Image (cartoon, rainbow, N blue to C red; front, top):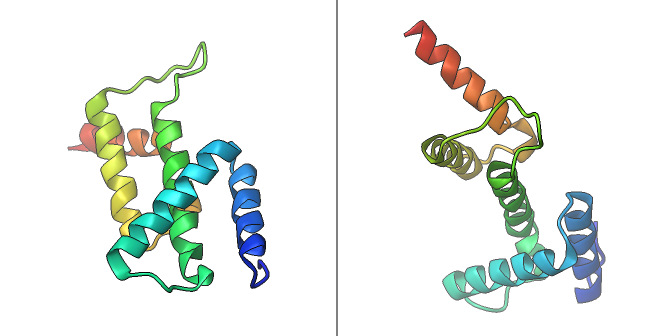
Length: 122
């Protein structure tokens, strides 16, 4: 848990970002965008602790989109249409809004296999 100082929160957020594989420039952009979006909606004067969950969600959302948009490694057996990627984004967004942590969501590959199995069974 970061200290009560601005520096403590900034360091913790940046450490969290790096641990998730997000570069520092992207982390800075995500943090600023998140804080600006929330303060424009709910006003200024919020303590930094107020932004902990939204910043964590922004990092998770970024990582999900990177996974979706990543160029598949050579030899990867799976590639996905834009329609499938968009459907997966909706799935992730629905779960994010329901408060489901990113670690409890299916990966793109797992989700696509589930959809394929349900289509075969139908």
